[in-house]
Image 1 (cartoon, one colour):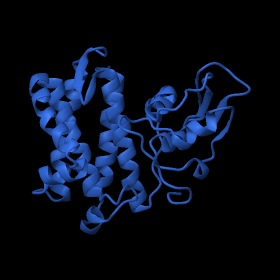
Image 2 (tube, rainbow, N blue to C red; image 1 turned 120 degrees about the vertical axis):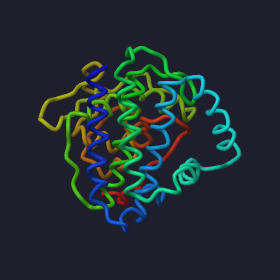
Image 3 (cartoon, helix red, strand yellow; image 1 turned 90 degrees about the vertical axis):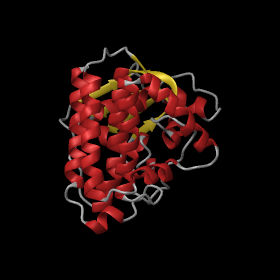
Image 4 (tube, one colour; image 1 turned 180 degrees about the vertical axis):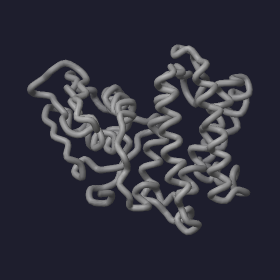
Length: 263
């Protein structure tokens, strides 16, 4: 549990350090992610880190607060609008300072959990380790929107492995989530890590494969890049279909950017 918690903290701190460099105009400039601003991206993370901290430290209070949120979402309110409402009194730097306090406290609370502890969440409860991995993935994904906004190349780290693992292990769920038949064969996914190491999932295959950089794969499964804008190579029945709709995050089916939009 200590390793994933340290990686999660490092991911938080890397994004916070980038946000420290944002100008007032950049905080409000739209990103490629549904037109959210950098402020919206951090407010979104802040909101769920705040509720995540509540889930970890006071499950009963979390469950009581989750019901009103579910009702608002069911009524048509957007989570982006709800986050804006909660943090409207904070400008970019103040929001960043508030988020730093929250995510630091969340990592500290998670570090005391057993990896298999069940934490209440929106939907089924999650294991503590899986929860930490999901927070890392979401932080990385929304962080990519900010990196794209400022047009700077993002440092690549071994933390990508957590995101790639979520991407591979949600292969079947991606089809189930769209009420589509699940292919019979799992693809062998071989990714090149930032340090040149190979990361491999599933049984070796010559007919159902995905190969390429871990960075490209993570951009794809978090729906920050279209398949055609990556260098991933693939073959096998159902593999291309999966890569075109891959979604490593929970929720209803979502579509990533069209080809050529985010390059």
